[in-house]
Length: 178
Image (tube, rainbow, N blue to C red):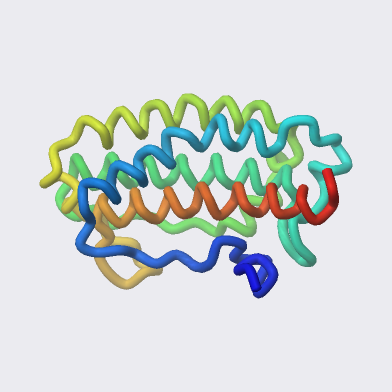
């Protein structure tokens, strides 16, 4: 049984950090971040407004909300990265992603969030490709996660997050025959 069939919330399975991080794993995670904008555009290409407003699973967000969520989440992650690189173990502020997904901008067309992902991921990958390997050990504190999060863990998590939400869209398209 595929992970998606077992639990449609986690079509690729739950996130599992790999430590210590090898240079190959780090490079693959950075490549996943770099490729997300184009892959997201392909995943939603040709969907009608009704399809965009279809939840990817019962009780889940719509495809439209999901794309806007990825932009919101990745903006927050990029800011957290920059804080970790410029401050000594800063504490970051959590946010309620479910409430953010109900704000008026979650009903907009996808292009503002797709364009945001284009620029954001260009900047994000420029930063992580340029920092020295020792800087991946820099950390921030996330109050909801009860401890320090390294830049390496952040990059792995958001590579997974990219694949995770892409799979929500592609699995829905597969199930619905779109």
